[in-house]
Amino acid sequence: MTEQASTNQFISDRMEGIETVQIHKPVPTEVSADLDRLDDVTLEEIDETCLGWTTFDSTGSKDGTVSLLLPKERLNDLPSQSLVTIESPDKRVYLAACIEGPFSEPDGLRAEMPVIVTATVRGRGLALFPKFHGRAGLEVMGEYRNGNVGAASYRPLPNSRVYPLPKDDAIRLLGTEGNLPIGHTFVGQHDLTLHARTDVKSAFPRHLGILGTTGGGKSTTVSGIVVRAQEAGVPTILFDVEGEYAAMFEPTDDQHMTAALSSYDLKPRGAKNVTVYTLVGRETRCPDKARVKYFGLTFSELSPYAITEILELNEAQSQRFWTAYELTKRALRELKIYPTNADEIGESLLLDEMEQGWPKMRLGHVYDMIRMVAAKVSKNAEPERLFEFKETDRAKIQQIVANADGLTSAPSWWGLQGRINGLIRLKIFDQGGTSALDYDAMLVKRDVSIIDLSDTESPQVRNLAIAQLLRRIQEAQDRRYQMEQANPELMHRPTLVIIEEAHEFLSAQRIKDMPILFGQVARIAKRGRKRWLSLVFVTQLPQHLPDEVLSLINNWIVHKVTDSGVLSRLRKSIGAIEANLWDRIPTLGAGQAVVSLQTQKRALITRILPTPCKLLMAD
View 1 (cartoon, rainbow, N blue to C red):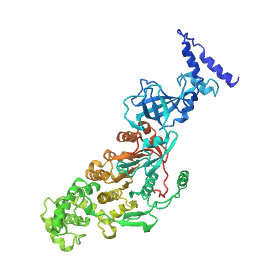
View 2: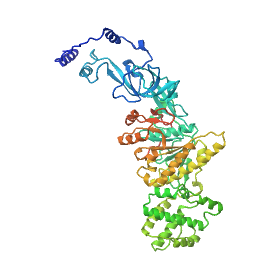
View 3: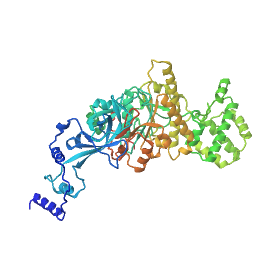
């Protein structure tokens, strides 16, 4: 028996025992004629530019969405994310996006019917295979009038014609133009380059979040943004906790990246004017040591509140630290170290220690005071040599300690002494001289400043460094902004500050115990938006970022994330990404991301441009 005969016999067997249903009312002749004619209607007879027609709503229909039916010849003309116009019979025109499908449906039958299954599995191209059409879900973005989109008070009526949106209109309406290219996105049949804008305050000065699991392409995204931001005239400061960006002044030598660049007619190239900064006494992964500059931390620039949070001192140690800190302030006053004149006295009265420490106070001063107090409460001999104070100051310190009340609990003082001694031994505090950073110079030119913290094993030390530098960068940006305000001829330029592994700096688990540090970052973020200072938070563990940080971010580049719990939390925090795109984030490939920028009308799946510069793989 031939294959065709076997198939026909199978269908005949399935049809046995089914009674013929008598139609009591025959189909009217004119309706029957119209139905017969549908088989002969061609796409060209109707409208060769029309994709299809909206159909009736069902009980499952939702506000803001309509269903589109389209001929099978048009299935490949409506890719995901396509923008279309809907011309309703009531003369209203709507702008919409394809958010579902298009799916293929058999004409007049349900896809799961046995006859359809049989024809598909066993028909193998025979005449039994039914004719079919397409169905797609459209999200109405608004009413389309005079080239602009406004709020839609009505829904498109059934049998509305749907047309693809021309490329120029798609570029204008989506807001993909700008001066900083991010990647490529397909909108319908159009391959568009998605840009960010650094020339308007409502765009890139708003803060950016770059999220995704390991291997999703975050480092490529970050380094590409740095290089292209520099070309757009934007200086960048990048906190690099793993040292992978320390050679980005060199062109990439990765074969896969070189091939990807070639597909865009781009060539490998390194960033220009790159300086790598690292803490004194630490190593850097930068291969060109001539580019390396060393810096130290200044104790007086750090808020004592932030210090106690970052060092994670327990309650007893924190109380002892504050006692020592206040005693040290008294010593500096009485020794005429600070304040020394009327101006400094007035300055000290206005000092906000939530933001900074006591001027001219050094970590060694506090360490000396802790040792003197610990010696008293434990009834041990005083230290033979003072670390920071002069020996001629010993009598004054003894007097201050002797007059202090409530100095008890030797074990707590010993514990605090050990914690501070650990910082002293690092030799990164109060080094002075060449270890001071010139923040103003870092922001004036189109420079790239890499803060290489890869040789700093302690997260606490890294966080202390980031906290100090962030505040000083914001002060420098304030000065620059005031200068630009006073001189209208100067162009406002944003500054990018990129914080890699942001979850280590601001952890959701510790945010309740670090209100002062978060308050500092929040103030920098809010003030920075008005001063063209943009913070970029990068993390592979977005679940560890607190909601308070997520609320500061307005722009998003979301690479692959597979954890359903993380996605659920992010969906609640990021309202600009549509539900259908969240469903696709777990399946994104390397280098793909859902991008939502303030200048865009809607989020888009984007192929991020490959980086032209060299990245060092983390060990």
